[in-house]
Image (cartoon, rainbow, N blue to C red; front, side):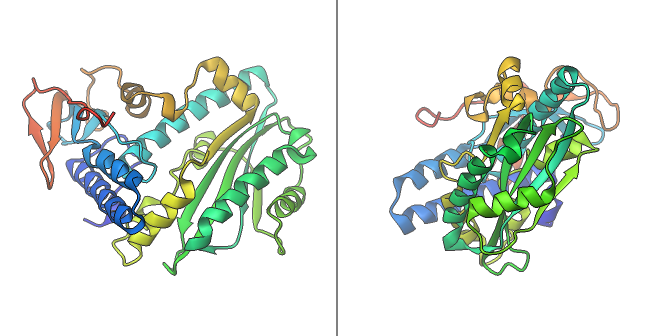
Length: 333
């Protein structure tokens, strides 16, 4: 199966997709262990150990007719480059964002949403960490200027880093932000570009885009994306190890997703937690919509059966119904 067949945005999963996701997860583990040797850094060993035990077990509903799985629960490693955990956490972020937007519309009937994209030129892998640091500082510069403070009611910001299309060793970090504003008063793209250029201290006009949001779910997806397009990271090329190395260095201890203004206030009032504060059960409830374990298959309408899967080395195997999901070994929580 091609790696590009892995479609993590879908809630219905086939056995092949589950197997592929875990296979990519184990490739991340191998890269982390290699980085531990390369940099003599025990932190990479600890991360690799957690990735190894990630999603060893799955429990949820399986349709015996079409073979699809849904409402699946597992214990994750929380590594930002893990295909399994990144998928689930992106769904949580998207669900939370939709809740915030719906609540904001109740409070501000004339509320408008716009999608702002801020980019820079592609950079080389060794420069990526520094460029991400500059982008975060430039965003802080912008939110404290009149361009955002005076006209934007609230915002959600996400950084995405994509390997170069030509697989030439370059990376394209950029920012997606949803802006909440009233029907009038939003700045022009030229003003945003000028502030972004000043904050980044660039000697060229960066490519920026500002457009009204018509499809809320589609826009929410933009600020809920994974840190990178995982099919471009795990591309089975000679640069795959460099992708993991440079991305890991660039995102370590970074707040890649943040909120401000009305968006942050509503999140607090709704009691929404950061991903880091949520346990695996809470993530499963958000990500997979676990509500009714007797639910019918949303794909074909057939009765589903409760199923436990265990990673057997090369693929997942089905276990007897009485087997429960096991936690991480002691010391890995």
